[in-house]
Image 1 (tube, rainbow, N blue to C red):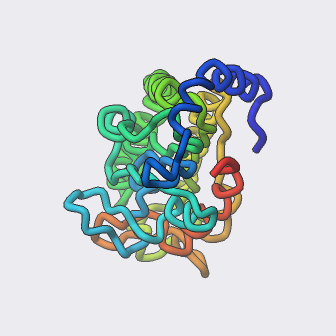
Image 2: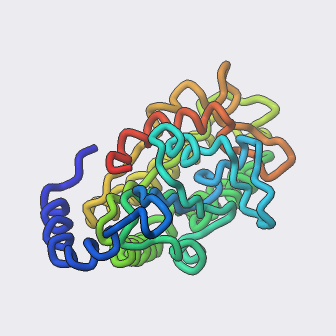
Length: 271
């Protein structure tokens, strides 16, 4: 959970280098007419925006930002001012193009959760639904090739841009849970236990790959897989929805987002 000391030293030196600018910006807050507070910026895809958790913001977008999403819960717990920029369907390139505008030198914490859409997880789940195991296996293999092939470089570029735009922020990369527990029910769309194992292996590969790139940047990695064990689709107490016929299929419900918040909040130490 701790950040590498070299990153802390670098941030300290950088802070000293711009002390004059910071002092000017913070001087006489009363005269400025507002009180500055540390900022937390949440970037990523539908697992960050809270698809599946309900109570979505009516903000004129298709981002499905939920009041029950873990960035909202974490910000409330810490009294932090949140810039909630995650959006359903986002790929890494979308985060780069559309979600970085609120990162500044004032930002103190950033969480990032993205990569599943780049690997095409929704398409893979569709290919694995039904009875064509060969189709499922092919889709899984393609997803794994993306995860190990092109995704690391895309994440590296994103993380570098985050560092450049928010040089004083601590950054936490947040992983995704495994979806399945080896149990079949109506919500699994006939995805067999064997296919579920392949999908879980792919989720593990995504987590390990993302964590590795995060570590190269000195970022923390919040791993939620253990927290969700026993709460997969079709379990007695599921934190992951099965197939619902809507965009919410195979996403964390409100209880799952609360579990995310319990894992992620301790990383947000500067808010």
